[in-house]
Amino acid sequence: MGDSGISIDSKKVPHIRLSSGEEVPCMGMGTFGSDKYSPDEVSAAVAGAIRYGYRFFDCASVYGNENLIGKVFEEAFISGIVKREELFITSKLWNDMHGKGDVLLSLAKTLRDLRLESIDLYFIHWPFPNYHAPGVGRDARDPNSVPFSTERFMATWAQMERIADMGLARYIGMSNMTIPKLEAVLPLCRIKPAFIEMEQHPSFQQPELFEYCRGRGIVVIGYCPLGSPNRPERDKTPGDVADMDLPEVRAIARARGIHPARVCLKWAVQRGSIPIPFSVHEKNYQANLSCIMQDPLSEKEMEEMKKAERNCRLVKGQVFLWAGASGWEDLWDPV
Image (tube, rainbow, N blue to C red; front, side, top):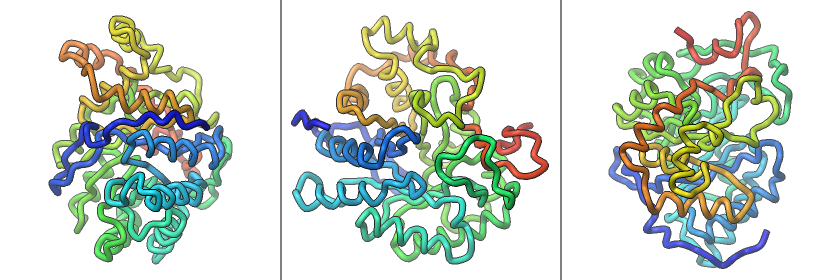
């Protein structure tokens, strides 16, 4: 990857205020290569993104690239491109590390790989201990898979609270939750989640869950903000909607003379979430960040974007199903 030498003033990127009073950038960069990009390609994109002005990076142990991204972070700190305290770095606990004592072990490896002394935000990646290896097909199943259990989840969350107590994670969060699951666990939390990560894009806006979190002071991080056209084949099913082809999105993009992706990101940020798009292409990740710094959508356009809702969940999670489940919908507590 080339380095254009172009950068923006990271301090001028819009920020979102946490319940703690701290402010973090209102858009970050994901690091999931979607089984299509190598760890080298992902880490090179992270290096370019830091130089350009990104200060929020969403990582995970299961992505298999934290060791290379850690080298990028270390080199950026040593060279003086950025200070450690200027970056907001997240990672996630994978499903095979929910057991007693495993959270600390998992975070220790992540910190070693990322070459950090502490993480800014650590998530429980999925609320199930149902393991699948990277790159498997959608029909793969863990024979030990089980449905959600409040007691089991809270045993893992108690470990998350412990790493927060130890100063190893400044914030802890949950991911891929539903309102019924949150209703069950939030009253039991000694330390509440500061962030919830969930699928968020124009065709899948999750307004009830989104407002539920916001109403409780929990910041929403939205993955698949562009509809993840490069998502793994296991996450593609007939009937899936392509967000950037939605008529509501395309009409706004056409009227403004911009790419539909820019409309999706402006919408997400103005709505109050933190989108985490990923691209290995310099022109794309630069445009993703710069677009949220100018020409916001109008109130009328924001209202029009509500009509783009198609209730189209893209990451259905079939690989996490247990014996006896009727379908992927069971993961998401259908009413």
